[in-house]
Image 1 (tube, helix red, strand yellow):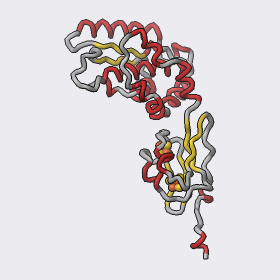
Image 2 (cartoon, rainbow, N blue to C red):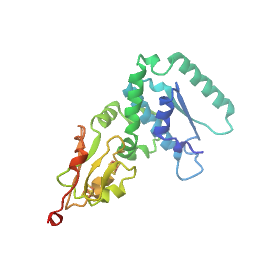
Image 3 (cartoon, protein in one colour):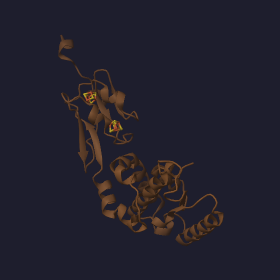
Image 4 (cartoon, rainbow, N blue to C red):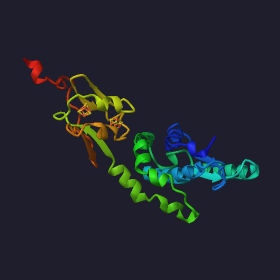
Length: 235
Ligand code: SF4
Ligand code: SF4
């Protein structure tokens, strides 16, 4: 119902499914019936996503947000006609920008994987209320978005420190941690959404979860080397 529910992941999914453009329609700014002002969230998400599209080599005009009331049918029709015309000018997604299908798909996939991290890293700006349209283009800069992708954090469990207490395993919201009783835990980087919960949850006396920025996490240790042999059990 509320444009604030339109997640960055939904927009990227539409593009991943081959849509040439995405239109988000919201209530007029400052006319939200609730205290949430979700339309500001939608606006900020769109502004961020436009910079992400630019970074991927896609034309940011493929994403548009307009604010209008439910009584403004003519305005809505005009906006949609204009958007349709713009998309026809831009051509099919990716082809219009000279990207190959595989290039396009890997770029969308890369951005989609980072959505939870991006939302956490930019949560403050995503919740802001811009008062003037002139500030739209400066809310998120191209450099800022480049840095987000370049300096993205990863989490890694140091095999020599992990004591298999299973706390992180139980707390990970997406079951990205592979482990078990007396098993050194490892993080499945494909599943990890970089929420940092394991980093905060690992007891300081173990401090086994490491935060890595700007470089990929080391590969997980082989499965056959994950068993922890406790000294008192050796006897
Ligand atoms: S960072 Fe979050 S998602 Fe990734 S392994 Fe740790 S708890 Fe799971
Ligand atoms: S919380 Fe720390 S010590 Fe415990 S299983 Fe996870 S990484 Fe290992």
